[in-house]
Length: 199
Ligand SMILES: NC(=O)c1ccc[n+]([C@@H]2O[C@H](COP(=O)([O-])OP(=O)(O)OC[C@H]3O[C@@H](n4cnc5c(N)ncnc54)[C@H](O)[C@@H]3O)[C@@H](O)[C@H]2O)c1
Image (cartoon, rainbow, N blue to C red; front, side, top):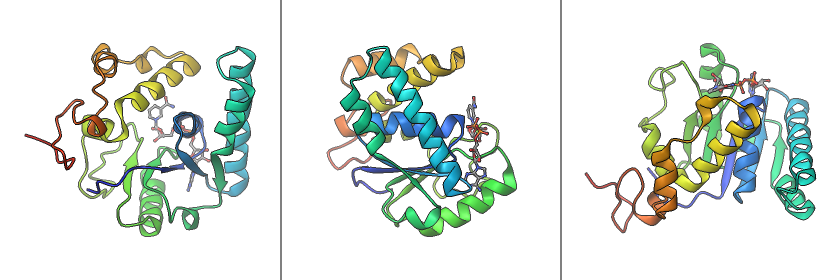
């Protein structure tokens, strides 16, 4: 696994989950490439995110210039060909095994060698999807940054109103303690100065 910092996040699927992930990633300062089955669907996904950002501005939770900056960090793209500079790819496409297998083959070939490929699937085994070196969810959370993961959970909980997204107290406590994962050497796991996970 690479120790490089993540600056560009690629999201595959601009549906309910993909839009939420893209919005939170861009709000957290990442550059986002948003892909769907067609460029038009990716653009429609970005338009929906912009409406969502406008609502946050109306509610006073975001300034107009912050909203513009967040939108500016989300680039709808035509497909895998635009994932050449992506550090972390998150697949959030329709829950369908054959479709996901095709997507993994196509996007895996397009990603740079250091990139991490994650799936948001709710029911398909990541081993079955052929992801190399599958990482457990807590280790992936440490890698992304627990502050970012908490922000994602809070946005999904607020926007979807589903209690299954309520952030667990342990995650909130770790963030409050400044244990933000790999970048601080301590999260769900501990890491040495080179970023290697300690047993
Ligand atoms: N909605 C939830 O509460 C929830 C929770 C946890 C996990 N998930 C998982 O997240 C994933 C996405 O779920 P969702 O609710 O956002 O679905 P959704 O139907 O809202 O969105 C799926 C998106 O994938 C796109 N898509 C289909 N084929 C594609 C392709 N070949 N390339 C790129 N994009 C493609 C669709 O056009 C659509 O925009 C699924 O695996 C689902 O199991 C969903």
